[in-house]
Image (cartoon, rainbow, N blue to C red):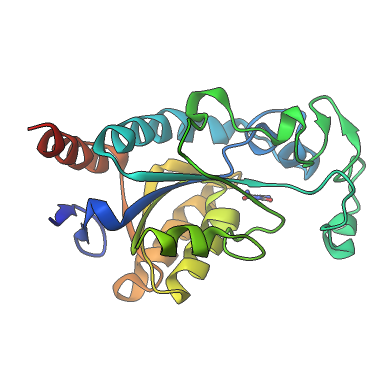
Length: 229
Ligand code: TIU
């Protein structure tokens, strides 16, 4: 059965059986002071706006039986998957792999690399570790989604114009329909937040659709109600 979520540039039609919720990089390294996001020179406080909407969408998706996949950006402890270009970019004082207040910066297994507790994965929700900005490159995400027949993506996470955009663009070229939940994402730059959303939905939805948690959650609750009843 198909459902519709009010969205721009037009309603997003999806079948819950073939839809996944993608929770992108809601990690301490981007969300909290003392992580990679801050070492890049950013004020990370705008990230907090995404937490409660993303948590509500996650909760509703779980009740609706929607397949949930989490991603994390980060590198192997031996940094063998870290391109030199990414290591050197920006000439940072605290670089990827250096010791920071939350462990080694952007390294798998460290505190800073882990997902924040509000949206922490539960059993049955794959966590995809990615070395890049896009969640499809150098990961098994496409296989994980294809194996379940997933065609549509509901997308939350950070940052909008970097990892969310790159992933939505990669997914778009692989044939997925993606709906970005605007208040469940965030940017370090207010202008990029605004324009980043515009870019997704322009030209008839060139990369996908944009909606809000207050429109997404009630439809997921309807899906959950139909499952129970
Ligand atoms: N810098 C920035 O805005 N983002 C990233 O480096 N990674 C993600 O977006 N996850």
